[in-house]
Length: 71
Image (cartoon, rainbow, N blue to C red; front, side, top):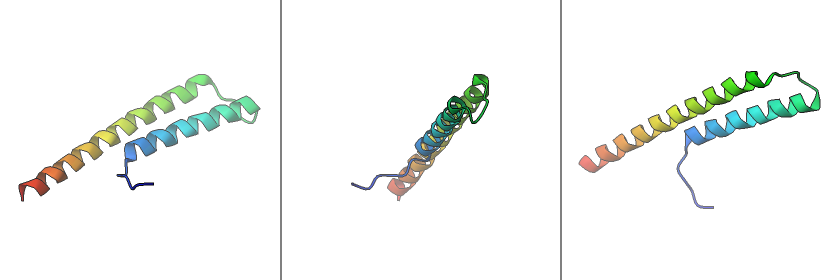
């Protein structure tokens, strides 16, 4: 596999969705009594945070590439 750049926004989105899936799995198995409206805000908030992290990562990389090209 070729090396690729690290994308923390995608990592965070994957972790949030995996956590939501595990919570729903625990609810379906009867281990946890979870209301649907408890997971939805967590998921939406986590995806918003992942988008923010992705935008910050993009801005930092764009700034670094412009400062490297200016030299």
